[in-house]
Length: 129
Image (tube, rainbow, N blue to C red; front, top):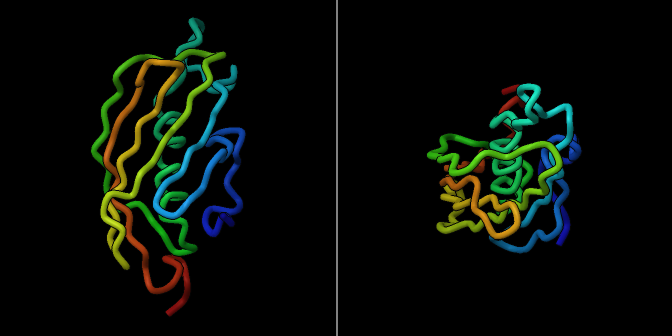
């Protein structure tokens, strides 16, 4: 399936799509040194959230999709060298509002889970009226 959204995103920071299908996506991210929050190699949660958000956007896969809200939980820490996989499923595919469940795993462990409320707007949010 073609990717119709977030075409300019930096995939080195938000992940590489490995599957994009109607209502679902999978995105893979390798945690690199520039994502570390401290000397121990703890990955800053913003990168994990970005991965999950990108997967949610791809599951909707519309040029005008935007994030309205998110309820998330960080379940385990991630470190430099980890390979994370985000799996997103659009639970309520409607024309305008989508509730997308996302889980991020590292191997067999779930490290992050959330529900993302996404909206498809009639035009791009930055388009002039």
